Image (cartoon, rainbow, N blue to C red):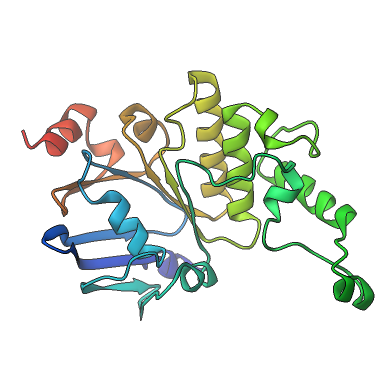
Length: 252
């Protein structure tokens, strides 16, 4: 991809509106995500962050506005549509299967079989999936000793790492993370931020929703603020401050 192509936003959301009955959740929100970028998405509770991301991932359909993917206008009727474009979302609850191991979680719903007979009988190629899982974790610089440990026995940081690995296992171009460090201690949160940096370096764009502004300032290139369903700020992290962003959030 040449420099001029990198200057074209990967995703643009323009004038997005969404109502749920009498409640107007989004009032013309805008969002721009560039290639190889980490965007911090912040705002108070009920600011519209989750609704905007659910529209981007096809969970909700917009009432007004438009979404562009590399300049082409698109619409998502379901999460399957957005996933086909390489957009993955990791929710705060991670949606992992706690009684399954790392390999099973990474390939959950997309298991692999080799050979006609194996596919007909539903036999899984466990060796292949384990090999590809290990290669994926190595690329992301995620250190998990045993891939056959049930994730319920792993730390919160390790579980977050497994969720990230699953999201990027199938050519993801955009990964959206909802409060990825909220339940983590400082050391484990730092490891998750390292993975986010590595995703950007490997060509994946990331949207991080977080109330922990320090994490946003540690990892993001830009920060966007939603308030009452509207985009009220979109600034480079290097050109702003946490105090300024807090004032945007609370309306000061």
